Amino acid sequence: MTYKMEVDEVSQNVFHVKMNSTKFLCKTFMRFQEHYESPYPQIRNKIFTRKEYAKIYQEDRKADTFTYYTDWSGFNIPSYVLNPFYAGKFDPLLKCEEKLLDTFRPYQHKKFYVIGTDKNIKFYTMLHELSHAYWYTAKGYKKKQREVLNTIPERNRKRINKHLAHLGYCKEVWEDETCAYALTNVDYLDKFKISKKVVNALRENFNVISLYKMAPMMHGKS
Image 1 (cartoon, helix red, strand yellow):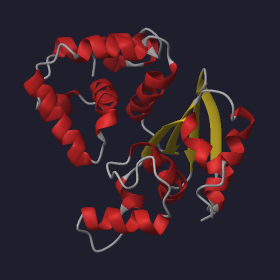
Image 2 (image 1 turned 90 degrees about the horizontal axis):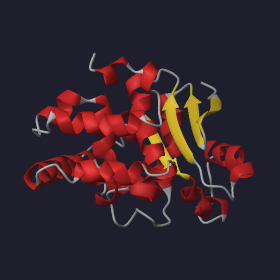
Image 3 (image 1 turned 30 degrees about the vertical axis):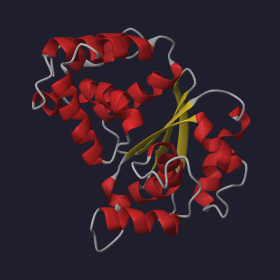
Image 4 (image 1 turned 30 degrees about the horizontal axis):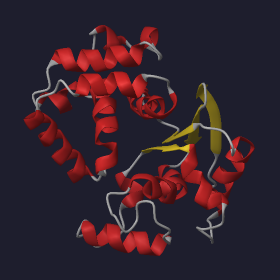
C-alpha cells in the first residue's frame, strides 16, 4: 500500500495529520512520540534508533514480536519534539519521517501541536487528542484543568497514575492523560471512583475553547 498523508489545521496552531494506514501512521510517529513521552528512561528525551527502541519495547512487553504498529492508533506531539530531528540527530530517517518534517518545516520556529491518526478516526478520539493539544497551546487550559485535578482524592489519583503507567505513559503526562480520558471515557474513570462532578468540570474547561456545540457527550447525552 502507498501511504497517503493529509494535514489540516483543525484549531489555531493545532494540526491534524491523517493517514490511510495505521501501520504507516505508527511508523511515521513512533520515534517522535517516544522521544517525547516514552515510559522508558533510556528512550525519552534521548537519541535512539528504531532497532534499539523495538528491542526495549518487545522485552518490556515480553512479546515474541514487535507489536507497536498494532498497539497504537493515535499520536500527539508538541512542536519542539521535532527540533532534534531537524538537527539531524536521528539520521537516518525513514521517508515517512522526512515527509512529516518537510510538512512542518515552514512552521519550524513557531509553537504548534501535531495530532496523528488514521483516516477512520472517531469523534471522541479526536476530542482526546485535542485535549492534549490544548494542554500545550491554549492559554489557561492547563491551569484550569490542574485546579480540578487537585480536587481528586490522592488515593484515587494514585490508582489512575498506576494504571496510566501500566498502559505505557510516563509520569510527565499523567495529568494531561487524565484530562483527555475524562473527555472521552467516563466508564474508564468510573472504576477509579472519579466523581461526575470532577469529570464535568474538566469537560467544561475544555468546552470553553473547543467544540462544545458539536459534542453531545458534553451535554450529558453520552
